[in-house]
Length: 124
Length: 132
Image (cartoon, rainbow over all chains, first blue to last red; front, side, top):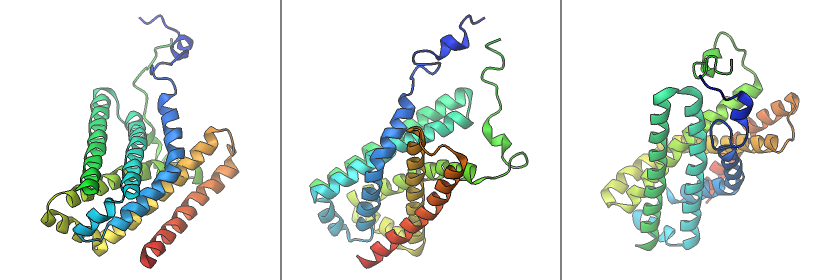
């Protein structure tokens, strides 16, 4: 028997315990990505099709490397909120928890691998 | 009474199909979700390409040939459309979240704007890459 009322559950940070943090992160990254998505499309698009040595030269430009890294991290952080939302909508119970962990692992691995690759291209 | 049927409610996809008539507002919203999930796939492919470029020449050659093929070009064009569409879709959410344009006719117009805008931006992107 649960003695909490619905009103009590919703006050403060609410039943989820995180308040509007997820919603705010989506809004804030949405606005940031209006700048970062064009970076992603044009910086990455210009890199594809080059010879490997040329790719290294291209990313040795700090502005290119930073624009690529920033847009990559921004995209993954935003898209993680997007995918988390979908998982929470369509999957329930233990499967939801495990899927959320898997999505988080995938996203952080993506950020780390992307940053490592850009750093190597930029510095070597 | 507060705990009736907690956690065992029907989830939304069961409504699609026979119970629900497609509308511009709902279809444009569903497409935001689909393009969002697809865009994570796009970022994954981009990271794969970057890792390939940062590893051996043979791995890079294999990746680059796939990305530069007709299939790769079409895939990147579709990925660009999804990114642009998702950007515009999220922009609509930001406008809504700040309390503007919440009426149905304006929302429907913004829905059309997202589909047409994403297509125009994708064509412009393709033209820019063809020129430079």
